[in-house]
Length: 373
Image 1 (cartoon, one colour):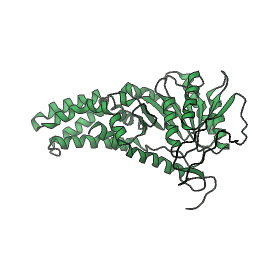
Image 2: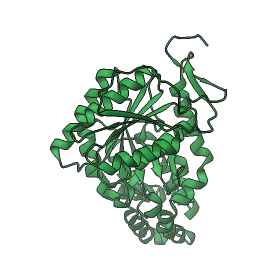
Image 3: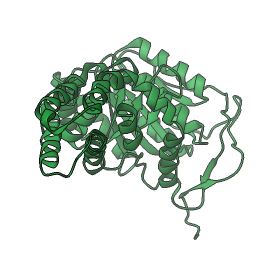
């Protein structure tokens, strides 16, 4: 493969991270920004450096492939939704043609209870009805397989690319947005942990300048993942300034990915939503084409109520991917399908537990097999 200057390579070698005392290149940074090195290097398999092309492309695929090896986490994470949908197996076990209407009505109800949404539920049931009456489906097992195929096809066709799209130059910039209490900062920390485990040099930006505890929370994640962090010192510092300085530092010091936290905000608050636009513009001035991803974190326990939030955030900043959290505590996992169908925005990660490795890359096939075993 040809060597291209200033591109990134994925090299199979041991990681090399700076020690806490390492001197970093000088960066013109206002006094109110305080970068911290949190020194523990993770046990990574890969190292990134200037050289070959395609590092980010391969990184995205690698993370997605890891999801296939974590099927058990996905399966256990959707246990409550699966229990909700278990009635479908009972309905189809002794299915016969004479019971078609009753069975389909109860199947539709089961989908609705799991927050598949009226539009999706009706569409699925009508397709099944047509195939049953036309003789294409002749047994309960065939109906279930057709149901699973229908949901999987929808996720694949409308869901687009579920792996991270990080571009071709460093640093890649990821901005994480969402409402208060959705698990935004925690999701960013878990994403940093996953990236660090692949040898990625990560810089965090504490852009939640409204909540004092948010910076402290992110600092804990920086310590935990062995990442550096840029935080704002002082009450008057605005999020766009923090993100801009973090991306500048990421560019000057050769970071691979800058993960930017933002303040939680109601999607109905116009002024706060406009601040996100300013954040987006601020990072674009430092690195052309940034941000590479704008990930919206949604609380899966709220079910279909995530749709208005997602629409508004998408209209304002152009969301590129979704992180659905707390799905392990919810029986409303069908909202994953509804969000993809309604908005056409891919689900990139799902939160299926409290552990650091429980933010799982979304895999449509694993998801379908988890809720319809």
